[in-house]
Image 1 (cartoon, rainbow, N blue to C red):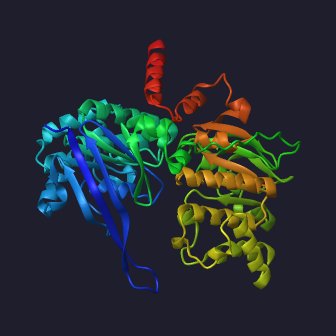
Image 2 (image 1 turned 135 degrees about the vertical axis):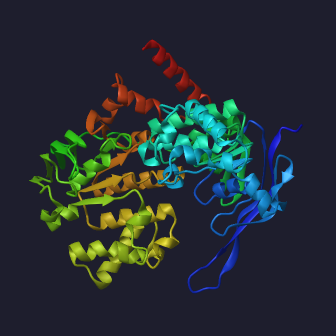
Image 3 (image 1 turned 30 degrees about the vertical axis):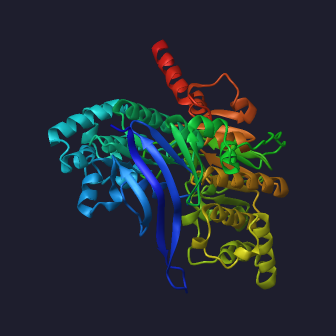
Length: 545
């Protein structure tokens, strides 16, 4: 029997677009892609947003999302061209022979049903197992995937487990029907590095133990290098480079692949602190209204003019809550915030217009931070009107200057957010903050939703603007690579407390506390065998304890 599980030849995929004030027309978004995947092997599909990764992955189920259509080529699964299947045969294929793991488990699980019911549903409805046997297999998978209390976790609802645990439950869902092929679509992108490493380990072990073939879709080359046998690099629906993981990582041939491999190579020299901080957080403790649990516990940090303080930690550590306290959205229970030589009111409503102007914020999701009905010019112009009373030609001139500063130019003034890429949207949000001429900008996970190359461009832009404008950044992130690239000082948070704090050189130098050591050791490195080394080291540490 052939070892070939998935064969794709000259795959072409199109969609119909509906531009404003113009006739709908068809476009091609995947242009003749071909590849093979053997049984028990993993092919990584990597590239920036819009490269066609997920669209190609879903073609393994003969599925097109959101009006996307497969317009040409062949997709063979187990020796059968599934594009010639009728809908009845495709329903038998999907959820049985080929399964899918999406990026957001939280959005994929039904909150009203228990986990076990959802994990076993496809296996039972496709006739692969009886309910009793499917539940027994689910428990076995829960255990294999390292989930706590595997015998009983299935009785919980999705909201009763962590994000990392739910992502592993989704992997169990995909593996429960004993499929031949699993499509993993960015399964760890939304996770913290500590959670991501656990999920990666579980996925790799599950692939190895079940012998399933897999497509692993991601924009993170360091991650895909740990689980893949081969990698296909995609850009704008075309194959840029395709080969064994060792070749792609260690000897990339194409300029685009070389750029992916060398991403986050920013060389930021740590700056010495000025005598007087621009922001001082003193003994701040905070809790949310209606609770008796402190989400921040006696926080003390400083930020100096023209510097970057990186606040790092996993989800739930208190990073964004600290930003809410600083901006006045959450008054602290105790402690105070001193800013630019004055003590800030704990309540946003009591702060002056000058307080608001000098303390700006850039949010993680640029999509929801801009009014979709306003043009770029209107969005950037609002703070110019509000804080400085600018009108007419004066305002237009300043908008153009700001667009030049973010390296976009005045050709974008009349565009709407929907007409911008993810990186362009985030640049507009940066320009809107700069329009207020702030002393501090709080950057809340501003690159976590972006592709590595786009994120790299945003970080370089922020550093360049800092040199020119002298603005200080409070940079909230869970990405240690970002921290190393841009920070002057670092505060590591864990369960509402600052567990390590100081200059970048001090915080990133041993000896480490246990949590900082775990964070640093969980950042995927661009080298083969890194994940196996981490697994081996943790086993040794566990045995030693």
